[in-house]
Length: 58
Image (tube, rainbow, N blue to C red; front, side, top):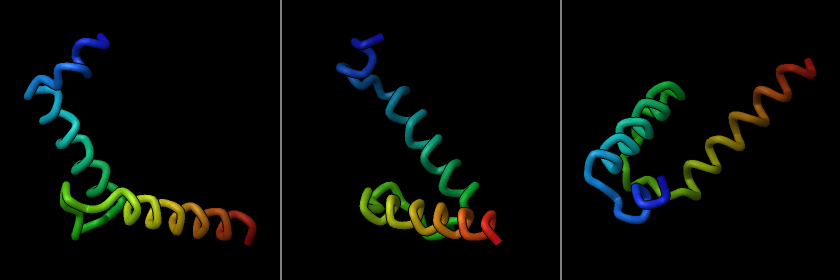
């Protein structure tokens, strides 16, 4: 299994890209691209988490 990640076969890279796009679509991120910085993704996830936590407290 480790060799799959060390060698980065094209099918695995493509599967990760498809999964990333599907998750972004599930969050409703119409502007997602694979070039979106990790910092922006984390900022959005934190904002969503805080929003949902506030809704649960209310």
